[in-house]
Length: 208
Image (cartoon, rainbow, N blue to C red; front, side, top):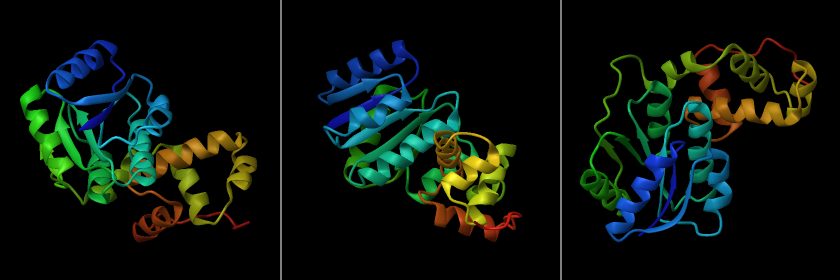
């Protein structure tokens, strides 16, 4: 089984790669920068991507969503010390195939990898918050700017129009949009609109 690994902590990443290689896994790439994950992933299209959640959760969830969108045959395993509503939303939407407590031992992770590679969806050591459905509580994790971006998405604004309205570059808008999609556990703007409308978060700007 081939793996790509990504975790912002270099020493942990090195130890994880060594331990998994010792169990017979082929490590096609191991990177500490989440922005380097997708370029590293493309040439090999491995069986499983193991992603340790970093400080800026939205960026890591966006990367997971992008991997699943571009390489649907690759299973995505998230490692974390806890699972927020946004993480559960990504799992419920199918963007993530497994949620695993980062404190688990290598034998447990080994079993999880075997299960997801065979097509199972797995939760190991993570407990769902006893609150509203995950995609609803995920709205609470949007920043004020991300809520503004979501309203503009609902109102039908293009990336270029959002750039002009918000006074930021188109690349910054795209980053905000990716964070919104990841936090809502969806992979496209149309699905984000559906979630926003269902929850009553509607656009207040005139469509352009």
